[in-house]
Every structure is written in structure tokens, then in C-alpha cells.
Image (cartoon, rainbow, N blue to C red; front, side):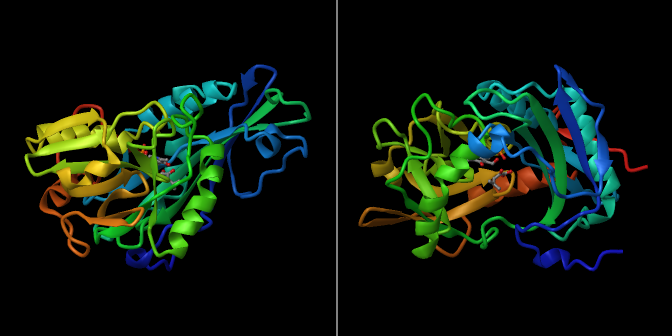
Length: 340
Ligand code: PLP
Ligand code: COI
């Protein structure tokens, strides 16, 4: 039995017993297997190390009230991993292999899926990296696909309490770059801006569109949404942001469960007063309400710096109710994990 204090988890690495690992060589994937070794043994010339040829995913397993375990839209993570892999000239991971790997890892580490009601979840990290002997800038001769997991709590310290964000002068992605792919380089680019934001006591940065610096793109680790006083749920549309599975789920729920008008469109940073509520959304972030945004000398407060707004809370309840199996999900959103 584990002795984890489920209700006080943050978002940190915890070693769980089992991870899945498969290798790609000569055009084929190995069958893959569960292993206890949490170190990868790779060639010094691996493209993942030199040229950032790697991509990853993030998804969660949710303990239901009846003790079973749900995955939330893992097929979408599989599709996005393959989109990222295509962008970096890496082999596709068949959806069947991806889903089987995720399920095997959850089942093998099932005592680490936090109890229903603790608020915590099991975070799964699928990772695809280029490995093998290489030195020139070209795709790797071999690849590793691995999936590991750990129990996690809130990504942003406040959880459902609002925190503040700051508009960054740095760009996270280029107009026709890799912003829409979940590749390590985007996150490497966000480390210094993130550090500077944290130094000033902000939760994270908000990046603007790299072409005109007038429109909100996203947070370094989540998408952005705002809710207007006349019931519009608006989230940025841009080719250089990560297409968040949570965001697309919220667009659907805002319209179908809350009766809001759901819009993917421009969010101009000098028009923040259109919004009465705002938040960051993603797998790790879930829905993290934004109290205020610092933009140059201007600090704009939305609903409140201390209280979550009513529509953001209603969306959070819908989303997490579906994920934990308390609310009926739209067709195809929930995958049950057979535990025995
Ligand atoms: N944007 C970035 C940069 C992210 O890292 C993430 C996390 O995966 C998201 C958005 C949210 O995406 P999703 O809802 O699919 O987790
Ligand atoms: C996720 O939400 O799964 C992410 O990948 C965000 C972050 C931990 C980088």
C-alpha cells in the first residue's frame, strides 16, 4: 500500500512501479513491454538530445465513485501525438498501440490512481524520442515510445482559487513554426519567460501572437478562455497554439451544457475589459481561474482576485463531473480502463 497524502499532492514527479516502452527500428515498432526501469539508455548522438526531435502528450486517469477508472478522450491525445510526430519527421505511433500502452500503465499502477473525492488524478506522460547513432541534422534512425505516470494534484498552486498571469514580451512560437505541435522546443523556449514571471510572483506567462503582438495566444502550459458579460465563451484561434483537448471540450460544454455562445476567435490583449471571467485550461491545469493579467503597466482584474467566477465554476463542475464519471459524457469522451 502507498502512503501518499492524496489531497495534498502538487504537480511533481513521483516514481510509480511500471512504465511502457517500445522501440522503432528498420521501419517497425517492437511489441513493447512494461518495465520497472525509469531511466532511458540512449546513444550520445540521439536527435532528441541535440535537435529536439521529440514530442509528448499529457492525459489523466480518473477514479470513479464505483472504484473504476476513466480516461478522458485518449484517442485525441493519440491523434495529436501523431500530428506532432509528423511535424518532426518521426514515425507514427498506431492508435491501438498508444491506447493499449496507456491502459496497461494505468492497470499496472492502479494503486497510484488517487481515490475518488481526493481531487487528485493519475497523470500519464506518453513520450516519443529520436534515438540512435547520429550527428547531422536529420531524422533519427531509431525511436523510443514510452508512457509513464504519477499521481498529481493541481498544476497551478491555487487550484480553483484564481491566480495572476503576466503578458510576456517573449514569443513562444513562430507564425509557421511548431506552436501547434506538442514538442519540447516550445517548452524550452518558455523556461526563461516562465522563470521571469515566477520571480514576479505570477503563475505563468500569457503569450501574444508572434506576428502582431496584439492578440492573446495561450499560457505556457495551457490554453486561454474568457467569458463576456453577455454570455460568450471565447478562446483564441491561432495556428501557433497547441490545440487543447480540454479547450475543445469546454467549447462544446459551454454551448451544450451552459447555454453560452462558444466562439474560437481573436482575443485582443487591449480589450480584456470585454471579459468578466477568464481562465487557463488544459489537462494539467484543468480549469485554473485567472484573477488578473498584468499587461505592461496595466493590471486587469476579471471577476475577482480571490474568488472563482460562477460560469468558470459551472464549467469546471461539468468538465470534472464528466471526467470522474458523475455526469453523462458526450458520446466517445470516456474510455473505461479494465482493472483486472
Ligand atoms: N497549451 C499548452 C502549451 C500545453 O502544454 C497544454 C497541455 O497539454 C495545453 C495547451 C492544454 O492541452 P490539453 O487540454 O490537450 O491538455
Ligand atoms: C498537460 O497539461 O498535460 C501538459 O503537458 C502541460 C504541462 C505539464 C507542460
